[in-house]
Image 1: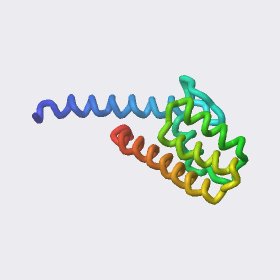
Image 2: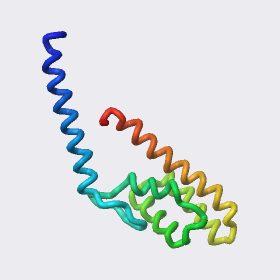
Image 3: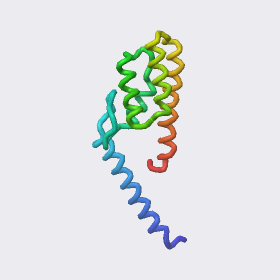
Image 4: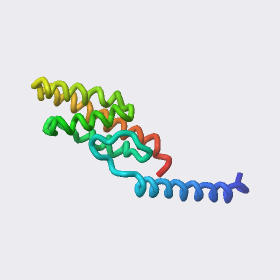
Length: 124
């Protein structure tokens, strides 16, 4: 096994360099998420989820609807379900009920981001 250690180290260094390049490339090429963005080759999923983490009943309904459009367009239906419920409750005049839906939505966004970080932790 020791005779392969040098080759293994070379491969690890190449992998580290490739991963570093991809992270830098992603940061330079991807556009930052804006409310209402729909799928594109450079869609900022992390940015959308971070925006979802901070959404609240104090937001204009139009902004919540734009955020919902983004989540639905990129097939994040589990998270979007809570947001949809909150939007409907706000429209029906029940902001206190919407707060619960939005808290669940915020938590789902955090959970999804956390699962990305756990699954990709080997990259960094």
